[in-house]
Length: 135
Picture 1 (cartoon, rainbow, N blue to C red):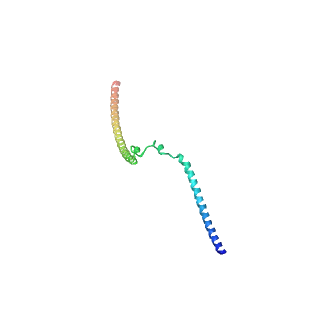
Picture 2: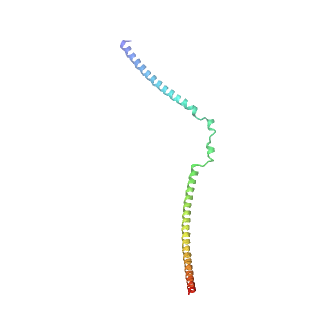
Picture 3: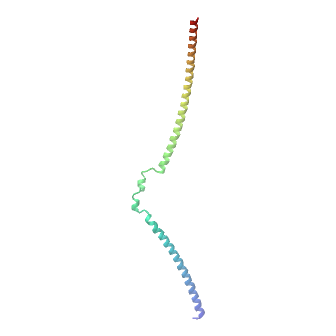
């Protein structure tokens, strides 16, 4: 084999070795990344709940006994209807109270005028009686 062929072969081998070294460095970097991730996972694992830990909490079956969003939506609708009815009843009660108060005021005025008339009659009677006695 000639020297130039050997040099070409060595350059080719050198290029392949360089490529392999780069791949090894890339794999090494990825392994370090995996190691870092694994360390983080190992730190988190002890804090995670196990199946045994979760048995103390309610299951989906247990939660079926409680109210759902649909139940609350229905209750909210019924509550709004009740509020509306209550507002209407209060408005009616206020209206009736005003009417009763106005009726009572009119009745009081009538009675006041009636008493005033009675007082006037008594005053006239006392005045005439007094005039007769003085004469």
